[in-house]
Image (tube, rainbow, N blue to C red):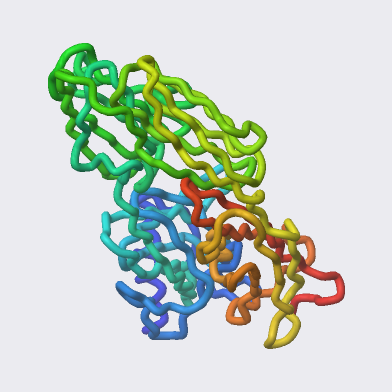
Length: 429
């Protein structure tokens, strides 16, 4: 009698899910070979009666992570007995979708805005009598706020006809930047044209003051959900007397061949011009009130900025050796025992020390497989022994990019690609 009642309960659950968009299926039994499966393998099967965990979950197994306001398709659910059930704890939500012709794809959303990274879990169950539940640890990463460089968050004071340049970082690009009063201040793109949606692919923006005094607000809107917004007040004041010629920075440092450095020119009598004391080290060009310095080869040079009245100001430039990591690639094989494969060692050269702590970028399903550390000019990349899943023959290699940034302004960066290979002699269990 108990078995008959259990059978009726499972049939009722299946009909309820079907009414909500679930698939068909039957409440049968499964074996180890036909049990619920997630591809690629993430998370871990729960023991009978175990909980998947709540906020700050410590659920075991390879997990997934994504930023607030974004979504990603992480895995395909198969085998077991459909229909399948999906639930979440923490700041993520999930559902089963049909994506690129693949049914039962697990789509995960970074749901709620948060000021810090939040951990939780996703559970996936099937409809078999010996129901299988897989618990997947999740992390929703907090978004950094919108910032501009130089920091104009307190506002911009300009004179008629003046042009300034700034870069936008943080939150989720692309950004849309608009002016509340184009007669006072107009917004444009620096080093790129805006696209049809009104944002600058370069992430660099120009602000040009109008011919007369007034006030306007620049509004920066990110692509996150909900969007992050920054408002920068702009005040244009009539020039009563020409201010002294000045540049926003007196020194620039960068690696040869890296992104050019820029400074803003103010005061004096426009238009402005610039010449380099040694064009084999650095060259300079002027667009409006922005001087762009290109780093050519290691050495020092002086950039002389002049206005139309003949006043001048100097900018000291130091160019370091090209910033790079050698060798450019490295390869890990499958874990060989509890110790895993030997760490890979790379050399960091050039740029402007000190170097940043390295960051590792991996496909979400493989986060935690590789770690990196820098000491002086040595970069060490390690295959984590806590994530020793074997990559079976026929599985595509998994690329990991390790990035290091130097301390120059604007910063340069160098990266190395590490690939997790399977080997024909190390068969997966």
